[in-house]
Amino acid sequence: MAVYDQTTTNLLVVWRLASRPNARVQVMGAGLACCSLEVEAAAATGLLVREEAEPPKPEPPTATVLVVAGTITEALEPALERLHAELVQQGPVRVMSFGACATSGGPYWDAPTVAKGIRSFPVESYVPGCPPRPEALVAELERLVDSMAAA
Ligand code: SF4
Image (cartoon, protein in one colour):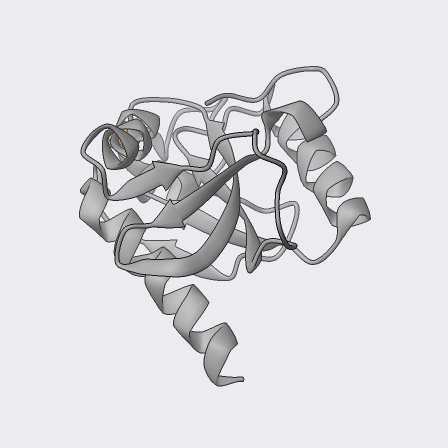
């Protein structure tokens, strides 16, 4: 998963959480560095199950989540901001900062070209770690889905 300079629609993936089979979470992964491998690992190990495009989607997703995973350089920041703005146009978006880099700059916090975390839009949740484990991503998605169900 990565930030691409094209429409976001084709990059949105709907996942089912193995532990919450009725929840459909539409995830946009902004994979900027090594943390994105942990996001991929969550899928590879079956914690997240990708919903196939066919047959057609039965109902709207339970939630749309932008997962920012990795180091945010100042050069990449505008693309990330555009990505978020495009998603917001399509409906409510929850932003997850996955890992130390997306939260604070991580080990590169004092590099002049690295942003000290997401600063262009609000963040719903922070997942600590360098990197966090795939289970931490899933746990946070579960928390998000459960909190929405309880609201
Ligand atoms: S938090 Fe650690 S693992 Fe994640 S992108 Fe930064 S350096 Fe890589």
